[in-house]
Image (cartoon, rainbow, N blue to C red):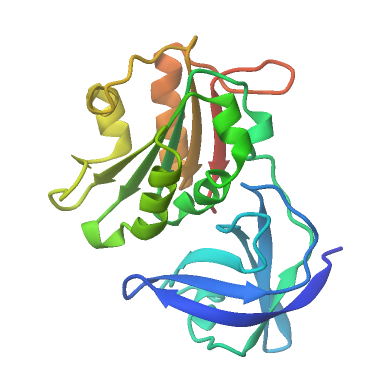
Length: 246
């Protein structure tokens, strides 16, 4: 049974006309960076709930979620209308295993994300654990348009705090002002992504966390598998750890 508690809306930050961050305060149980919870609202006497990953560090009292206002989305359309002081329901207990303690230590870690799936990585990057397990971390964010590259101030702050962090945008529908053009899968397939990062990658020195839409996760995993990487499982540690973002 879901354990719903009331959350008070503190702020809504609009990045574009469809991308926004919802910031709430609520009495939730402790969670690990990378985990997700559920938000819900009642509509026509029916609870509509969706899962969203925490963007904030577990130590922060402000609970933050990065969303896209889907044109036909039952919940996102309602969440987009919220104002400071409004309330929404949140599941108090978080779920998920897309956390740094599930990843084998290695020389370098690639965080591959598309769209709003960058959210859990931002939470993870604020934890000291990641910097104890990896000498270098590369955050890759695939988007359609340059304007979709949200959280630039946060990423710059993390890079200043942790010089071991590299950031690589990949823009698919227009020329990238920073980073690479195309899709993450294309740039892995032709080797451009690793060349741009100036990284020598191999199953012996690299780990991959992949978070995005199901097709992106499937295609990226298949490309890496062809290159000799394997799925990371508790019984059989590998190099590929995935989270599908819907």
